[in-house]
Length: 154
Image (cartoon, rainbow, N blue to C red; front, side, top):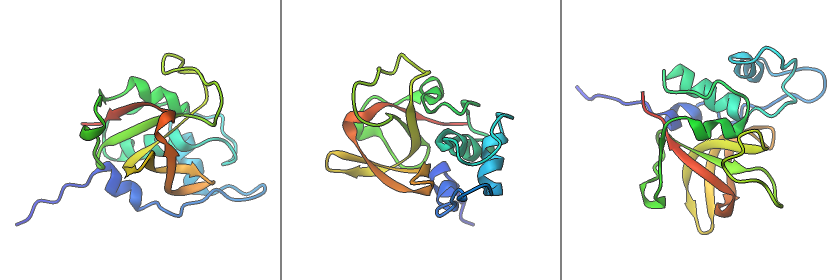
């Protein structure tokens, strides 16, 4: 009999296409992700990339940040130091949000973004994450925005 191992990346893929709702209606799935660790979100019009990663980690009983701050993931899991060691499966990538002069990884309270590693493409890293154009999808980000990479193991 074949043993099947479900990775965080595999599970996250099941949610591709999950979108926040426009207007005053919220997607119940996104709201559930947000409310897993915080009571204050009243709708899905708040940043929810960290909520998505926390939700997937929670379902697999993996370490979680339990925070809606993307940079909170810099304090979770094992540090992955080499680009060659990063793998789709249990690795999350933490990024600076937007362009400009953003602080480094020592400032957890600063804006950021987090998602599951999906691959390298030239000078970009592909992330499978939530709140990427208001949905769960694979998006590409310049590698210069990477603050850190963490491996989640149970």
